[in-house]
Length: 360
Image 1 (cartoon, helix red, strand yellow):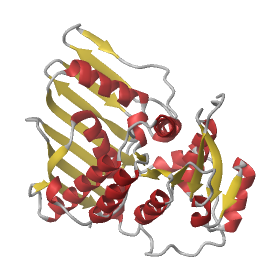
Image 2 (cartoon, rainbow, N blue to C red):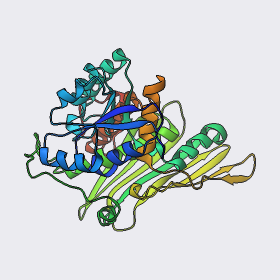
Image 3 (cartoon, rainbow, N blue to C red):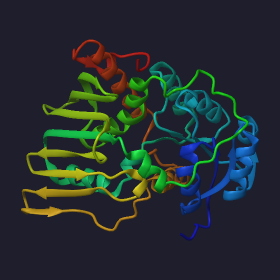
């Protein structure tokens, strides 16, 4: 795609899998972004990324990258536990911030960050890329304009046991460093219950809140069988009589399963979402009771990672409100903490505004 005359200079922090598979490519293809800098402490990996993506500058020190006056914004693509501390540094340096989901791991620290962001006036966007799926976006617009009052909604996210074989075929080969030491705090994937809920559950509930509204309470159950983790969750939506059913499983002995069914008093939406690395729009069938017809989207650009960064850069250039705000990211985290607490209490209702701390 041809680049705009005026571009946002972006620096990517972290050369791990999500940066290699998504953000470097998205920056080079976005019409309003220049991949200006890459930063990583591993010099050998940084050198390989420099040769492949050819940014204007490379850094092994995040503080030095932040001190560059030509840098407009940063993408934080590090482990979740470091998101908030690094974002605080970037905000203090006057840089706009795009941070991978989830926004953080602890509600208290994310609220501190939110206060700093609001005081700064900078653009801060959370990387909930599924909102930029053209099918999901089309469904959201249909619901708002034609669906009427929500009656019910069911949503599911079922990671496949065979997904990584497919992912390896679709993604570029992910390079690693021979120099990196083990990350502080240990392996975040060691606690599978916590890791799966944080990594996959954030997608499920961000989609629910995008299309249906703010989750006010949850009642959740978890089963673990043969290494398969399944959460069954009922939730209530603020200012709505409707009840939401959510289903999260990692990993089904089946194909990837993701989507939702939404019913309103004026229409309905059926959505089937694909493994994101296919860059294929969700299939949606939106039925209007007024017209008696179905509507759908076809042939849309479905590079979700590019689309979310273009929206971020557009907000930076034109002083717009972020399309995925920090407070929305925090409420996604609140829902996950509430799910975790409800599971421990065997399905007891937990209100999202009452929770503190992190997923356990």
